[in-house]
Length: 306
Image (cartoon, rainbow, N blue to C red; front, side, top):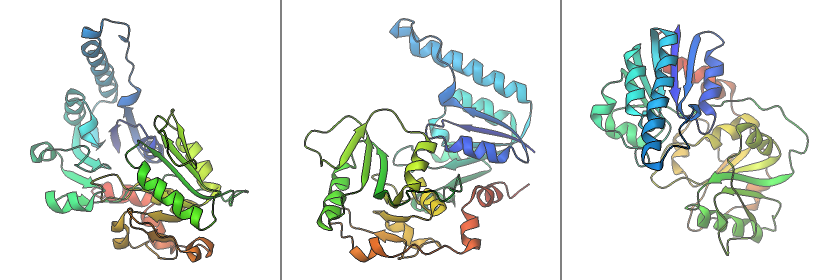
């Protein structure tokens, strides 16, 4: 099968998906974030227009080289330039969209959704409201147990300052338990007066770097973005590495992998962390359930028509 996979792949998750699909199928993967911008030195008034024109040419050449595709899988189409999107869809027999952001962040009209044969979304509320198919994110790597697994009591790697107040509340909750060996990393400019346990950084971390930190931690923290109901990739990184999760996302209670021994749902405003949750061992997830969340299980769902 010939598959066209298009995504603005800021996080690197789509590349993992492309590598998996390439094992059995012919895949043309286009990361629109990686398209060159050759006119960065042009006058500001022309720069954006010229770069968009150039990127459309690059995109169209990649599409033309692939010919016709059996299926186009577009991840977060609201992030793709409309002309690029049209070129991708016109070159494909079947059109599938997967949304791993909610409409509160990247809205799409019903007309924009209607051009796809199937639309999957990670957000259960969006799925219900728009009649879309609910689909979780995926485990993109199976981590091998490594040494120093207990180096950090808890880990979070996130971007943006909006959730820092909630993270500070969690830091104080850990401090009250006498647990201070946590690693809280936030990608944004330093915030004056923030909790001293939070480290701010500028450059986005690679999936590989995050994965190494996950392996060295006992608990992964997940603080939902405003308006988010779907589960972030943090749950699947934790599942693959057999790590516990502390989360503000109550929707995890509806998933079959949920186990209160492994996942603690907290109130963002008043987080309470029982000491027993930190000290008790991780409980393995049954294999049939785990497999459903792997890349193999995920692609079998999305490409079930084949």
